[in-house]
Length: 76
Image 1 (cartoon, rainbow, N blue to C red):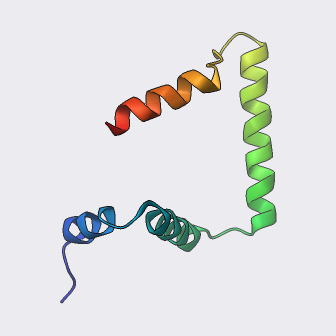
Image 2 (image 1 turned 180 degrees about the vertical axis):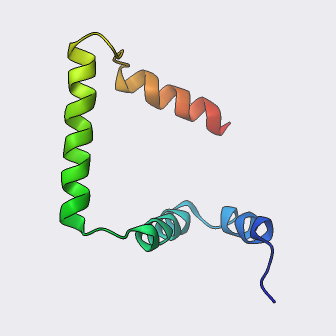
Image 3 (image 1 turned 30 degrees about the vertical axis):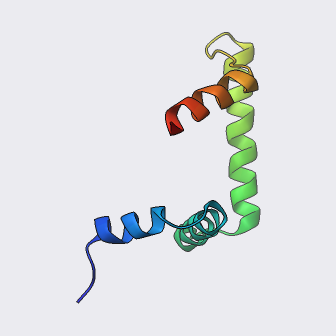
């Protein structure tokens, strides 16, 4: 019988950060149904879309330092 997802997640969250990162990478890789080349192309298109939105004033820029500070605050 399979274990409840919440139990698996709780156990995974107890892993060291490097192990969690590796696990996250493996899980994300398991979801990919497109090639790496297609994935790169889609991300390039998304980056262009976001850049155009920024240049047209439809999106705000947030300094990296602020983004990282927000993320650190959320982890506490």
